[in-house]
Amino acid sequence: MLRFNSFGRYARAKFGGRRLQKVNIDAGFTCPNRDGTLGFGGCVYCNNDSFRPGVCRPVLPVARQVEEGIAYLGGRYKADLYLAYFQPFTNTYAPVEGLERLYLEALAHPLVAGLAIGTRPDCVDERKIALLEKLAKSHFILIEYGLQSIYEKSLKFIERGHGFDAFLKAVGLTAGRGIHIGVHLIAGLPTETREETLLMAERMSEFSPVGFLKLHQLQVVRDTKLASVYAENPFPVFGYEEYINFTVDFLERLRADIVIQRLFATAPDHLLVAPRWEADRHRILRDIEARLALRETFQGRLAKTAAFSPADTSRGGPL
Image 1: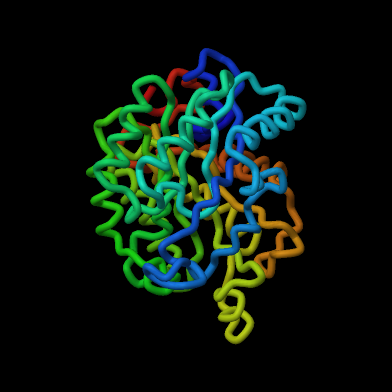
Image 2: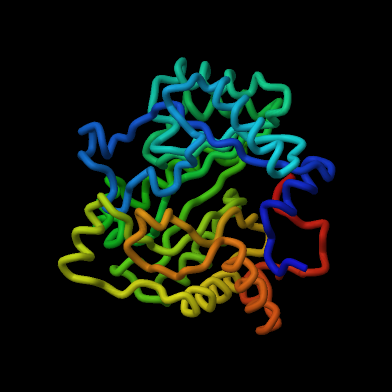
């Protein structure tokens, strides 16, 4: 029995017990931190090949990517419904008319129940949020804001190109409009202490509109600025057992109803520099669950809001 509020459990409750799977879409977006608007080369850790599936190809039309993704995932996972996940780079970084065309193209497939849109908090505005609000009247719409850290010193180190205030503005603009809000955070930045990073769980719990969260350890991958920094002056990265314990501590402090989409990252071996754990995603997840059980704890146990009960299958974030 899971001791945290997993996305899988949430989706089954939301979609009447049907199995939901994300189909990755690369719509050919870029990023203001790459095209010269804010900078070139992206954030210091950014190599999109480290998380983009091989079946996700921007040269194909969105409809074709959806069809091929569903054909692949349907056979592998026996899914019933899908979210079109606009993942690589910044997926609101285009004129609203172009965004509407791409989003509607993905939603046109009868098995696509909604969209998950990864973006930066400084790349939304009233017109774009109004578009998502309109789509949310008939589909599940989740916008995932890549915050990475609440600390200005960390955002400066990773050369993010925006401050925490951009996140506050984006959440304020999005809240209360039928759009689900998610946040991405990175644990283990060399600019933060362990306690500072754990404090982000409490900080995110204060934002009632935030209903979804992705957390992962800092990974140093090849062909990034961070890899060069690490080569010249190696900084501490999470060991395997250290991260398992950290994740449990983080979940204890996190508001109970926040849906967990991810708790770790697994970059391909040929790109990963550090940390190298030699553990696949199934083992990592099993070890996190086992550590929660060993410590007889669960998500929200130490949060200031009501604790998540492992036996309560009715919870699962905002429906």
